[in-house]
Length: 312
Image (cartoon, helix red, strand yellow):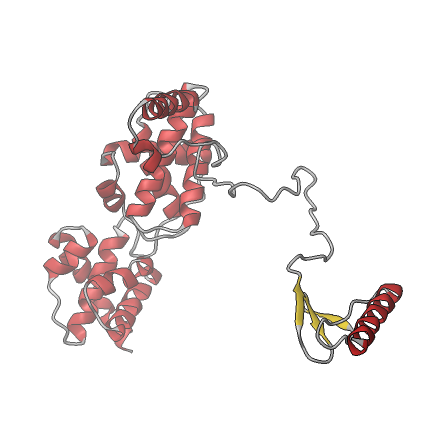
């Protein structure tokens, strides 16, 4: 009894000493504690007493006064008409229930969809953005192409260019225009192949965008098509390098004017494969570039005089 009272008295003295000094002590060895990378650790036995995951450092700085320091909500999406800030009533296990609750959800979802758009202009914008996202996904294009195409579509709508024209055509035309501006090698046929617009609708929209908005577009170089066409034809790197020499020489000789760069790229690959003894037919080269065999033959005739310059 006397020993137990002595131990209790020593513990009380240790606790009181810790309270007086304002420093916590270890529960096992009564050694002082210290903070190490967010953990309260005993300096003697290494016991982890507490873990503090709160970052108590300085507040992050915001230089744009128009924005606030909010940390909630999803990031804004430029490819959506409302920047992705509106609420949506989705589908899930709760929608499969029967009875009044299911009917209420159906009614709420219908009314909510009707109230999403304040005007016909906003509804058309949402439809155009949806079509742009679908085309970009089908063609495996980058996020920057998607966002710039949506911005271009919105600019065209604000300028009144959509009046009397197809929304699907402007969506496809916006994607094709951004590909031209960013030098992304995509032909009109490739865009039309996945769009809900035909070639004429795309060209009408592209001409309106180019004329009224002044797009900084230029002729596409055949060099932009070579890597993709070489991959589709399953050609080796040496064939692509020889084709790149043909294309560079063809462009530097000022013979590209008025010619389809896609057909020129396919013809350069055919000539390079022929020089290196790789079996590639003119039909395969024409199919991968979506041109006729006559186009391939015509470009080959123009490339043959350049063979000596390429070999040298």
